[in-house]
Image (cartoon, rainbow, N blue to C red; front, top):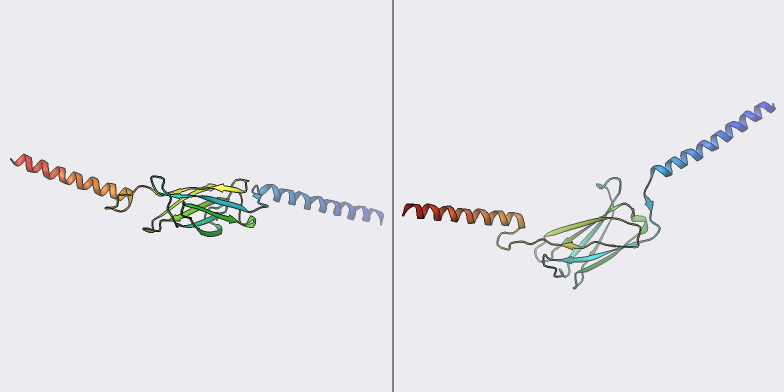
Length: 166
């Protein structure tokens, strides 16, 4: 009977050690740091020359570090008259290593621009958003430049053909 007790005692000890090993492996496998405090996400929304974009709606998405397609939390706020936005993100909604994406909407033309940063272990994260230059006559920056280039080329070809005929 005493040998049976020793076998059961050894099996119990082996079971407890196995549980500790599995628990330690699970902790090591998750290398993200859980945040214990809220994070203040703030920054400026500016136009292409650095002027503040007043009253711009701002969306803040916190994307999971291991799969940026998964949004853990979404917050919204509005930039002030100086272009500054600020929003507190709950500690349960972010971890170190998560991607913090800020999307600003220009209230004048509804264009959107974004910027992002990897969450660090500080209580405050600065992420500025700057709208690119646009040619007002043609709309979107790159497409406007392309349209302007085509128009200039067409005028150049027309002038060349006209002068060649004379």
